[in-house]
Length: 289
Length: 289
DNA sequence: CCATTATGAAAGCCCAACTAACATATGGCT
DNA sequence: AGCCATATGTTAGTTGGGCTTTCATAATGG
Image (cartoon, rainbow over all chains, first blue to last red; front, side, top):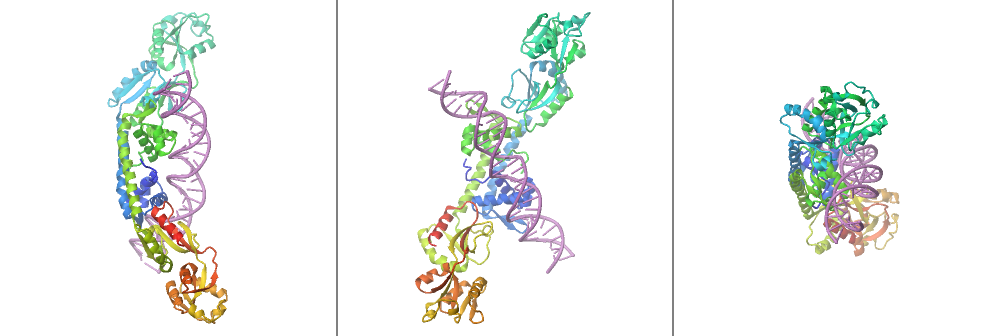
């Protein structure tokens, strides 16, 4: 497209509004600027095009012949642009919400609660993709993610959903009848870790768990660690958010709580305008946190 | 028109070019910006609209479903705008040149020369409006004016065409056989002035012409003053530019030249882009000055 | 594997687009 | 004719949108 011989688009928009309304002041009101801005744009376009487009007509403005010739093309053209944008935005807003969370979060925190959302909002489709992959929301087409970390990722907005304080947990069956107030108390029990989760291991060592004295097992996923812990296979260190249902129900015993400054499960969204339905979903998430 | 729910027009133009070409780099080349500018605009529009419009596809970019939905509306809409502007500019460029000059300039300087222009450029119509009115070029639809003064008018471009030094002139018939080197020499002759032209009278008095001793006559227009001077009715003070043809031809005798710093006949045009034909006419004017 | 071409992102610059303020023009009413 | 309200015209000053620059990363073809 040959844009070099076209005045600035904001200036043409000003001219269109002025031409259609017959008034610099009404055009200004419509575009939320001052009449001075419209007047300057009109002059700029006239100088660029080498012809007068509007002249003073009593208290308002009238189109010249050239102005009358130009106006339909601008009104039609800009109308097409606005219509196209509006339609796409409407369709985008109607699409199912697409969210991604880690598998353990999906399994232990989100899915147990989704029934409540679907009951309350049968009209809103939410597509949940459990994945460990580091996802680019825009590239991969997600509206939202729940991610564990510090929440300071660049290029996205992050809102804390649940602080991810760790807790040391075990099945009641393996703790019955024995001391279990400190890590040392439990150093003779098996300790279960997720393979990739070095941080929890390092914390345990720094708090007194002697790696030479205790038996440790590595499992592939946090879900496996949790399942094994429930089964009494050992002691593990979990995010409190993931296990608070088990603790509340008595399936697990919370032995030591470990505050973790700044870590947590975060609701991650793209910057910019958020659809009402996404806002609703996020508000629901916060309400069940 | 509801502009509030529309991303910025320059950003939409970038998206249109990227979508149509399938490449941020090709869109950048087309719009004469860097690929980074296009990429930023794309992101801005996507954030605003809440959906992805293009994704990476090998070395280029592919439209998403939403992007494919949006593109025709942008291409069609912007195409209308560009077409409308182009058509009006073409029509404006084809219109006759409309110029305004003072009547005396038209009669004594311009019209005697216009034959040369019309011979050289039979395809260009020039409409000459002789008027003393102070004209607003834009409001009154003129492409150009020739105006006498200092050339420092606000809001227009002014280029000196001819310096307006005054000369004191008379017909040879009334100067024959007598001293005529100074104003005093000629104080017994009738002096002819244009009614509104106080400046020349004031100059003559300041240079020694005694109003009590000489006979002065006021005529309505500079053309009348010139015609009377040619007829030997008296001495007058004229702009050199207006009478140099008469002096060259011997119809008038230039007695005293009066340099006037900064005054002259100026070509006055509107700021901004000038049509090729107007440029051609102005160049011709300067060539016959 | 490397060179080339493309996109991605962040920091910084600058002027287009605007506001504020004041001047001038127009029309209605008294 | 004068006053007042409403509109446009213009200029000076401000600022953030639009861009460039720079460097990083990704993809492709030879």
